[in-house]
Amino acid sequence: MPETLDRLRQEHRDIAGLLDILEAELADFDAAASPDFDIISAIADYFSGYPEACHHPKEDRLYEALLVHRPDCAALVGDVVAEHRSLGNLVKQFADAVGNVMRDAEVSRVAFDHVVRQFIDAQRRHIDKEESGLFPLAANTLTEADWAAIDAQIADADDPLFGKMPEARFAGLRKNIAEWEAERTGNP
Image 1 (cartoon, rainbow, N blue to C red):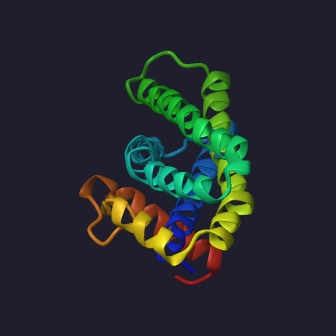
Image 2: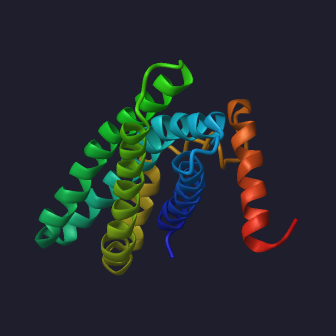
């Protein structure tokens, strides 16, 4: 499997894990328990940065190469690229809602819940569309030369949360991820 596709799939797994944590925190919020808004805020901060600045541009390069071989996929690719823009808007709405809560602004529980659920659902649908449709198509269509060109075009910025040199601002979230993974797998 091409290295770029491996990285994109790993990033999707990482994103899915964050969405799982976000859902768990939202469940606490819905149950009138006290979710960890520092964790929710860190997740919003992460989504405002890395996926928008690095992950989606990588995918866009992949889709450009795919269209050279498969112009018949233009509608599907166009839909996914448009989703990248709409996901950016949802990230902003999510981050704004979290910021309002963190600043103790007046935010209804229903409105907050709606924004976060809309964000989670859109992210999951988008990943599913790429994983089940475009990624297999790219894997079966693109040549080694295409993959080499894509790799050369993509700046491999280190992921600030999951990368080799995680940023200090995500230390609490990394701890939460490790705890969540230990609970999920039963490995302390």
